[in-house]
Amino acid sequence: MRLLKLVPDNTNIDFMKWRNLALILSIIVTAAAIALVFTRGLNWGVDFEGGQSVRITFQQPPNLDQLRDRVNALGHGDASLQEFGSPNVIAIRMPLPEGGEAAAAQAASQVRETITQAYPGARFDAVETVSGKVSEEFWSSGRWAIILAMLGIAIFIWIRFEWQFGVGALVTLFHDVWMTLGFLSVTRIQFDLNVIAAILTIVGYSLNDTVVIYDRIRENLRKYRKMGIVPLLNLSLNETLSRTMVTSLSILLALGMLLLFGPDVIFGLTIAIFVGIFVGTYSSIYISSPVLVWLGVTSDSFRPKDPVSRAARGPRNETDGAQV
Image (cartoon, rainbow, N blue to C red; front, side, top):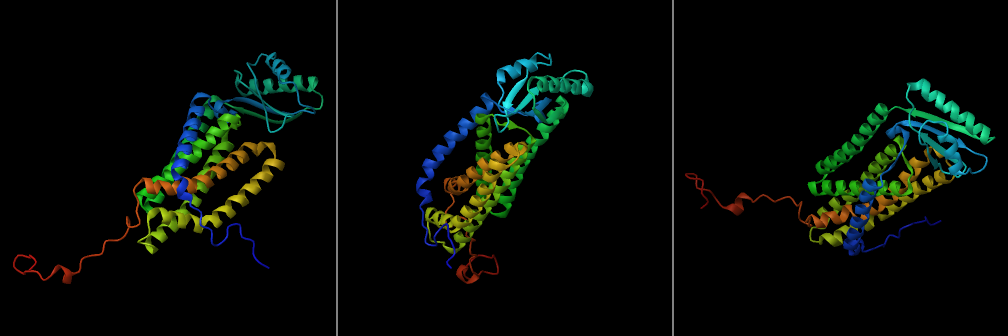
C-alpha cells in the first residue's frame, strides 16, 4: 500500500515570487492589529483588571439587558456581561467591592440569590475574585514573560546561526504575537492568564518551525554555493513543506476538536493557539525566509574564507619579513 503524501516529492512552489506582496499585506494587517489593540483595547479578564467574575449557565439564552439591570440593581457597580462560548453561558464581571474578601463573598451571594430567583435552573460554574494589586502583578509577570521569551529566542537563533537569522526570528515572533492580539481585540475574547499561556505556546511553536526552515537554509547554503539566494530559499521551503504541513494540520485538527467539544473554560486558550498556529505557519514561509533577502544575505555570505597558502604568498625575506 502506498503511503499518503500531502506534499509530492517533486513539489516546486515559487514562494519567493510573492514575497513583496506578502510583505505589504503583513505590514498592513500587523499595523491594523497594533492600532486596534491601542485604540479599542483588549477585553481584560479579572486576572489582569481585578474585580469579581461570575460565570453562569442558563437553561435558555437570557436577555442581556434585563440581566444587566438586575445585577446593577444590587448596587455593586456597573456589571459587564459577555457570552462565554455559548449564548446560554454568560460571564458577569463586576468591580471589586470595598471591604475585602467578606464583602466580595457577600456580593457573590447576592448575585447568586437574585439570578436563581429570576432564572430557575441557572447553574453557577465559577466565581473568581482578584484584587487590583494581584491583577497588576499578574499583568506585569505575563508581559515580561512574553518579552523575555521573544528576546531569548532571538539571541538563541543569533548564536545558533547568524545575526540575520536572529533578526528574522524576532520579526516573525513580533508578527505572530501582534496578529493574535489583534484577533483577540476584534473578537473581544477575554484576555486572561490562559491567553498568556497561549501566546507563549505560539512563540514556542513559531520558533520550532522557523528553526527547521533555517537549518535547511543553512545546510543548502553550504551545499549549493553557486545558487542564487532566492532559488535557494524556494528549494529549502519546498524541502521542509511536507513537515510544515503535517505538523500544522495535525495541531489544527486537535485544536479544532477542542473548539467544538472542549470545555468553555479553555476556549480562549484554544482559539488563541489555533489562530497563532495558522498565522505562524504563514509567517514561517513568508516572513522568516524573505527577511534574509531583505537583510542582504547571499549564497556566499557565510562561506568561510580560505586562508591564503604560504606558497601562494611567496617566500619571505627573513630580514624584514617582506615577500620576495
